Structures are given as C-alpha cells and as structure tokens.
Amino acid sequence: MKPQNKFQAAVVEASKKLPSITQEQIQWGYQNCIEHIGQRTSKAKITCTECNHVFTGEEGEHQCPNCKAKLKVQTTNKRIFKSCEYLCFITTCQGYQVIRYLMIKCTAKADSYPEYTHAEVMQRWIAPDGRYCTFAKLRQTMGTMYYDSWIFSTPLELRSEVDAYNRLFPYYYYPKRQLIPELKRTGIKKRHFNQRPFDVYRALLKDNRMETFLKSGQTHLFKAFLSDTSRKLDNYWASIRICIRNGYQIKDATMWFDYIDYLRMFGKDLHNAKYVCPNDLHKEHDRYIQKKAKADAQEEIEKLREKEESFREAKAKFFGLVFSDGHIQVRVLESIEEIILEGKLMHHCVGGYYSKIDSLILTACIDGKKMETIEVSLSKLQVIQSRGVCNKNTEYHNQIVQLVEKNIPLIEQRLAA
Ligand SMILES: [Zn+2]
Image (tube, rainbow, N blue to C red; front, side, top):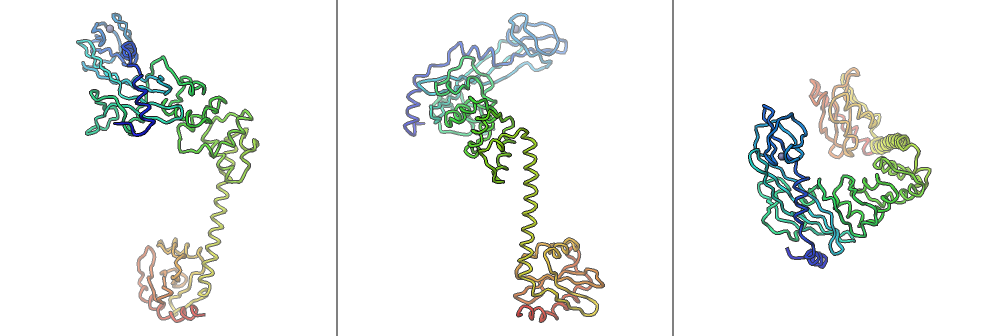
C-alpha cells in the first residue's frame, strides 16, 4: 500500500537503503534452524536426509558419519520430512530499529537431497520514539487458519497492521545483532524476557521508566509490565521509586502489585518504605487479603442492616397484622430475615421479594406448620399469588386465598393509617 502519513513515507524511503539478506546469512539459517532427520527403519538402518548416507544405530541424537550433520533419528516408514522455521534478524537502518523475518522451508527425503526454500516475509520498522510500521508479503487468508501462510510470490511492502503480524514469535535469531543507540543505552542487549523483541523494543522506546527497571535490576517489574500491557505503570510508579531508592528488589511483581492495590484501598502511604518494601511480601499480602475479607463481610452486614431499616420503614404499619378463620392463621412477615428464611423453608423464590415496594408478604400456618406464602399487591389490594412448598398449592390453597381476600379491609385500614 502507499504510505498513509509522513512517518510511513519516511520509513519507505529508508527501506530502500536496507541491504538484502546475504547468501551467507541464508546458509546459516539452513544449517541452524532446520532440524535434520535421520530416517530409521525397524532394522536399525539410518538414512541421513542431508546426504543420504546410510549407517546403523539407535533412536535419538546422532551425528551423520559422512556429512557431520546433527541428526534427530526417528524410526518411521515416512520418507518425506517437511519443516518450516523463521529466522529473525535484529538490525538497524537509517536510524530505525528493524526486525526481519526470514521463513525457511525444507523438504527432506530419504532418497534424495533436501530442498530448501526461503523468503523474507516480514519486516518491522521501529522509530526511536516507538512508532512503527510493518512491511510484509501477503498471506493466504482463505481456507486456512495459519498465520504463517505467506504467499512467497507477493512483494514485501508496506501493509496495514493485522493481528497476525503479532503472532509471529521468533525462535531462531541470527547471532550478529545491531541496535539503534536509543536501545543500546538501555542495556537490553540480547535479552527478550521470553517476549517478542518487537514488544521489548517498543516498550523501552515508548516509556523510559522501562529502561529504569533494567538499570536498577528490577527485571521482574520489566517483565510484568511487558507481559501485561493493561496494567498502568502510573498507578505504581511512586511506590516503585521508593523500592528502587531503598534497593528493594521486587521478585514477585504481580503479588506486589496486588499488595500495593490493597495498601491503596486501605489508605496507606504509598510513598512510605515501611509499607511498600515489606520484608515478607507473602505474609503482608496475605494479611491484607484477610483484612479485605473482613471489611467486605462488615460491609455486607451494614448493607443488610440498611436494607432491613428501609424495609421496616416501608412495611412497619402492617406489622402485627394477624387474622384467622379458626383453623388457618395468616400473619405478616416482619423482617427481611424472616422473608429470606420463609423462602428457604418453603423452597420458593419469595426470599427476594422484600425489596418489592408494592408487595406485602404474609404467611399462612395451620397449628404452627407453614402452609403457603401469600403476596398481596398494596396498590390493587389483591392477592397476587399464594404458594406452598416448592411453589405447589396445598389442599388449603383456595381457603387461604379466600381468608386473605376477606381480610383485605384490615390491610386497607393499615395502609390508610
Ligand atoms: Zn549426512
């Protein structure tokens, strides 16, 4: 595609100065990135797929006595072995950091020489300020799920960013590397911390605090911020500075972040080494977990208490209301606790009804045994429902409903009071 802005135009211009990958570098890739196979028959006859020399031996790692290639010996009837690897080059061009990806494919056969092919499939260009763009070949995107389905015949040119570029995780690196001065001075050298160099370099170039982590030996912090980009460094920076100043090494970064979050929650001074540099992080972290659990429980109790109070305020005028036909006794439930308990005993969902402003919840008993729970609409002054255990009606269902309906005037009286 054509450059979309000045930055991309400048990179495209610079890319004209990038030398091609040399034959020597490609050869290095063939030798070092591809696993050579020794094809072994059940009669212990091993064929070197590099030079087709035949010798005898066991499974495992062997060196071919003829071509000296390191062989991984497999006992198999298979005669064709295909492999595909990436070789990554870390280099610079015109003040940009460039990461180049060479794809190497090899088809090795037990009866002929191996065939190697290669193509440079992607380049990532990073400016000293962290901005970047990507040059790539086109990929086959129909009918395949693989991110590495590059079409070798397409040109390597500026492309709009797609997620697939980020999924390419290099395993092999060409030994000679070059870094732009802005990266060299960070002391990163050859370390990638198990992340893609692209991410490492950009993290360092975008935020000089990452460089501070490297230089102060806080590599666990460096790794943590690298692998979890959603975590905001600003939230911890003040405390991290205290740690660095006190020579306090953060070894378990995620636990330390959690711990700092707890300190923040409990209003502790995040600039105070006494808090942010605990001798026993594990112990302090656990202590705050306990503390938080207690605070949560307390809050829960407070909330219930508040709810109970507002329930009482809304429904107190109906408390003490009881009526009976001499056999069935009906009374108003007088607290949230009582309503929840009723729901549990009766295995129905009345437990959540305490918050219904328009509803009055009553319970019907015979000789102290719970029969049904009744919901009355206060605006309509009607029975909405009456339910027994597990939402089933009892044989007294109609009697109960009739009894409540007959006594609706009592509810109406209280409502008017
Ligand atoms: Zn050989």
